[in-house]
Length: 476
Image (cartoon, rainbow, N blue to C red; front, top):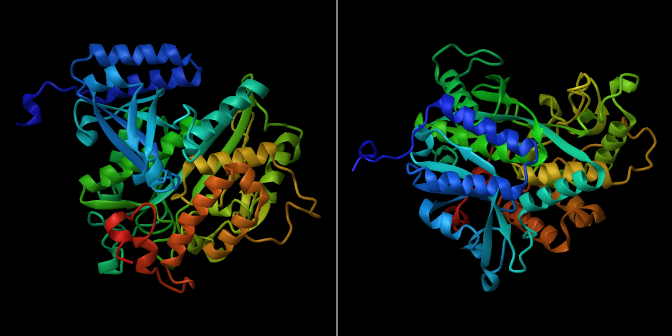
């Protein structure tokens, strides 16, 4: 029976954008959770064309998981949704597998039917432990709690904007087949800012931008990047949790659009050697009462002392949190100084090889840019570690800290050692979650050659957390 014969909800892109922007405004204005919950439940109850609600959550490594609930069931049972956590890497052991899914009604999205199916809406979930509190390995919940505490205790709104680069390759599931093909095939070799109208890369970028716009992303610019078949699609900044959610949706939309075109959108940091890798430059700022606390027209580089102190603390913990910002074996290929790689633990307004850069800004846009982030990292871990380090860490007493000759790890083994030895990462995550994360990363590292060498090894891709599944993992 075709979908055309079923009366499921299908909205125009203009209608979708309006609904999503209204929901985004509610979130921005911190409308009371019970008010939003009541409104969403009423919408689901009254809108007969909605058949299912897709609940999204992320595991410890940042891989996005989705569960479809029948709408009628969800409306009746939204406060009693359970799932098997032992099947999610980094969550629970088999003996304690039951976890609960809460619904974050403020993180509600209407998605285009032509890419997500008619009659479906999306909402982000919160993993709840048996004691009714946020589950410690659900970093989205950890980030949400931290951001709410900062707002309630200090009046701070944490803001983030992420520039996420990726590659577009020939064929569906090109990453999963890399063990057989040993190569990725470009769809375009035009280069930076250049792609002919109507070619596959431009069509992909245009289509993805349309879907994002419909989902309330508030697009800014999009273009091919420096490397062949590389892309970047920029959108407006947001409050930190919403920004992290949008990263997950951005990658999901890119992959969905690419698959429909018979292609693969890849967020491996360095899938091809000899060309620029992909980064996720993370721009952050903090506001209070509508004022950007990072702006000071009289400050060095027009940055406030508050912002410089924030930046200094990030530099202090650069090596400690490197494994959180660069979460895969492949990520350390990107930290190569020959390709504008941000591998130097310093702050600069001009040097793009610096871990932290101070972009040109004004009262509204003044910010700090953390450049050493790879696009395959868990966005919730990235933003949590950056903001908590910048706000609650301690600046090292290193002479000329901002320009000292220090470098980030150039391989995952060194990053693992730094991460495990750090007292700060224990404070960030707690001993239990820290140990789980390190164990997952050690498992991936042990399945790959210790020396990166001069070409991408199949194991780097096969055991990458965005790619592997139970079948691939057990082929080791």
